[in-house]
Image (cartoon, rainbow, N blue to C red):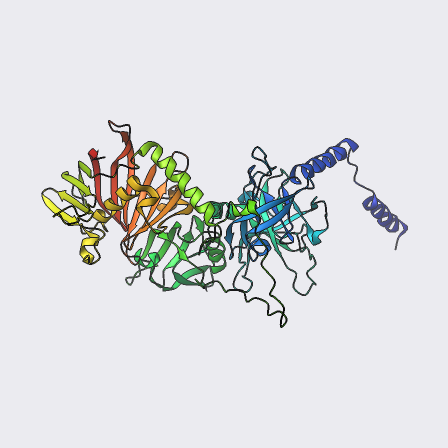
Length: 597
């Protein structure tokens, strides 16, 4: 080997060993930015003392996100520590067992107290290779509740982690190498702006002694946003299912997702068939079952989503279908197992349950299928107050008389119509009691129904034909607007969370090119008929109602627009579009709307 070659190697090695020449001012600036970031993200990081995990505050009034597996198997009362060194009482608000997510609320120690909180980011903007910071309380190290902060790379996005023991399915999640360990569960994952991009929860710990392996997973904050409205309503969340089994078919060119089987569901009613290819779902392209499950798992049950279908007909022609499908629950509806009390020793009393602090009792109410019914009632009542602030019909218990004109069943010739909703009358002297009744006249043709009659014929529930039950819907509209929650006895009026509202489709406009609007949903049940009321969250305007006389059939949808004030200052919707399934039954203009006191 020549001396020149040896010298070249030595020179190259020496060059590689020399530190990069970064101006000291730049080093100091970057260091100061990191320190400032840690100062920003630490105050809202929660040490969930009761569950031995972590969380993060997302509002000044004390709402915080954490994992289900941190708080979901205990009682409603929890203890939480903040970096100010103080311990706070907290309460369970909403639970998502399958998604391993929970919403809790720290209770302010005094009325004017505000909590530090973080800003929610956009996890769809997160890229592999981005820097990220995890914050939490691993191994319960910090007795003063100051969080441990770790720093690392985003290792992958849109990951899928199979459920553990039938729960804790992590879909569309973020993988990172920032160290997380037992105790980090439920804690925040931040981008370098200090925005919350995920909730840390799982790691690849198997066969590694439950110690960090550099492979951790966070629930994306965009998934959390979809469930947040339902969590705030005190619900136990269910994740969505399509109502069909699908499989991946690989050929030499590309993989495809084909429908194998369709169950009774909205997917079946919308016309999805075996052998259909799913080409897009909820606005994202689909080529594998893994992609499909990844997206499906980020959506609550009951939401409507656009589904794109490619179908090859028997004639060999390719046909594309654009559908809007309401998703079913993709989880088994098993009754929650009751915990067996410990047997104890003979002659010794069984350990008593821990008492719930009075401050927690004030904001907790137990009810089947709810995580905390107190928050559901509170949110429901606030939504109804906003609705009545401009409807102003509450307590107006008399008859309704509506008149107008419109087009029925695609008839271009306008028809006159009138609608009367008469309240029930008790027996008086020789007069017999009268039940609630609804009458509709369309161009001289009368329809009548007593909606609470126990032996109603199926046809009467659905009249007029093709509407899905417009008469029944009119009765429920009066109950809702004139009586509020009291119009649906037996706790038949609850808050259903927040979900997308899809206005009537314009001709030729594909669903995947339309924009939905997020609406508060109130659910009511009376006389075996269930309704979903869609309300604009800020103003309280009533956008729509879906009235289901049979859960196996398409509901009667009424979409309301053009609110106009009457002589009493009531802002009432004057344009109604009545739809059942994929067909428009009527477009109605309300010219006169009288309400007797």
